[in-house]
Amino acid sequence: MTARSRPAGPRNVLFVGNSFTARNDLPGLIAALAAARGKEFRYRLISVGGASLRTHWNAGEAVNAIRSGQYDAVVLQEQSTLPVKNATRMHENVRLFDCAIKAAGARAYLYMTWARRGTPESQASISEAYAAIAKEVGATLVPVGVAWQSFLRRYALPVLHDRDGSHPTPAGSYLAACVFFAVMFCESPVGIEIDPAGLGTTERARLQRTAWEQSRTANRSAGRK
Image (cartoon, rainbow, N blue to C red):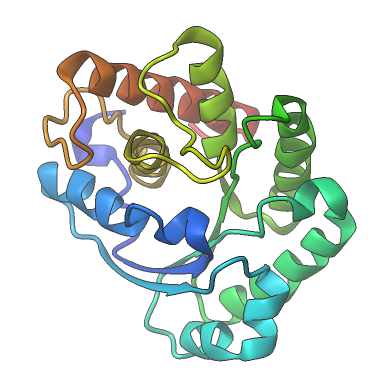
C-alpha cells in the first residue's frame, strides 16, 4: 500500500475505559505518534477507575458523547478481568455501545488488554473474548494484549507490567500506543523517533517492531489488507 493510498485514519476519537487507558496517558501517546507522522488526531477520554463498559453505559456520559456525533471513532476498553470471568457479559456490554456507535456514524475499536503478570495463561481467554465480539459486530480489533504476550515471550526489557502486576509501565503503554497507531493508520510505527516514555533506542525499536508485527497478523486474520 502506497503512502498516497493509505487510509487517513480516525481524526476525532473518544476513548471509553478505565486506568488501563488513562495510565501514562495512552491517548496522548497515540496522538504524539500520529503527530510525528503529520497526522491529525484529536481525542477525549472518559475514564473511571476499575469501571466496566456497563458502568460507563449506566452512567450515561459516554453514550451521550457518542450520540453527539462529534467522533468518527470510539475506543472501548472493558474491565481487565471481565473477559476471563464473564465473556458473555462483556459481549453484551460491547453490543450496547456498538449500536450507539453505528447510529452516530462512527467506528468501534476494541482495545484488547493484557493478562496480569501472575496469570499469563489468561491471555488466551482475553484474546478469544475480544476477537469473537469484534467479528460479530464488525469492530476493529486492536490486539494490544497479543502484542504484550509476544513481547514478553522474547524480551525481559523494557518491563511492561508495573509493580502491581496489572497496570502498564510507561513502556507498556508505549507498546499499546504503537499497536493503536499501526491499526488505526495501517502504517508501521517503526522509525518514529519521539520517545515520550523515556525509552532507549533499542527498547523503543523492539516495542515498535512488535506492535507492527502483531497488528499485521491481526489484520490478515480479519481479512484487512
